[in-house]
Image 1 (cartoon, rainbow, N blue to C red):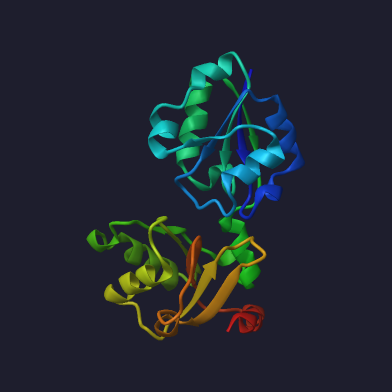
Image 2 (image 1 turned 180 degrees about the vertical axis):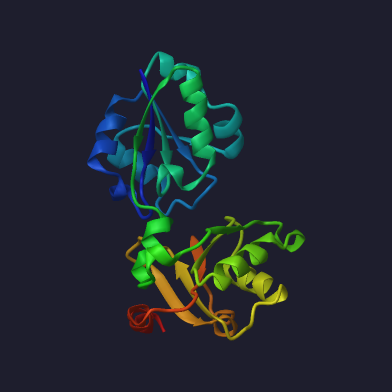
Amino acid sequence: MTLYLISIGLSDEKDISLKGLEALKKCKEIYLENYTSFLQVSKEKLEKLYNKKIILADREFVESNFPLEKAKKQDIALLIIGDVFSATTHISLLLEAKKNKIEVKVIHNASVLTAVGITGLSLYKFGQVISIPSNYKETSSPYENFQINYKNNMHTLFLLDLDLKIKDALNYLISKGLDKKTLCLACEKLGNEKQRIKAATAEKLLKENFGKPSCLIIPSKLHFIEEEALEQWQ
């Protein structure tokens, strides 16, 4: 019997791979992790396409109460928005399953870490990915880590906690010392047909409204091809 960790992509119910869909057909129980990213489609649409009931799983359930023992008797699956290993919590689950001698099969998909390539910025030039937590007012580490990237001419991708908006991230960075004239990219619903990308100064982006899910990018020194690519988002 097997625990399947199945990535379902960034957009809608059709983003799942054929391999992922075939795996689901074998599973007796299917859980959907719903705390590391926004699902851009209803759970009901997923259930209709997969022809399976889906159980929502919060952080406590996945990290502390996931029923690994069931995977010794039947095939079960955990669905993850984006790609399985975009969040470290899923590495922990995989390691715990292996300690318990449970077979694990991982099925990959697109994630925000690769979808940002649509901006035209080279993925090879991104530095440390930085998370801005809900309690961002109590920490300076996101800005400090950004400064390290920037000084080393590396682009920075900021991932925001689910309750944060682009404005929250920008206000935080500016409060820590970011120049309001710094070029930034606000990205909304990457991977979706309705995705929106805007390249402008931090000051100008503060006047825009962006929905969720969203992320923020601050580029470093640009190659001329990157400069040309960013013109389409200005």
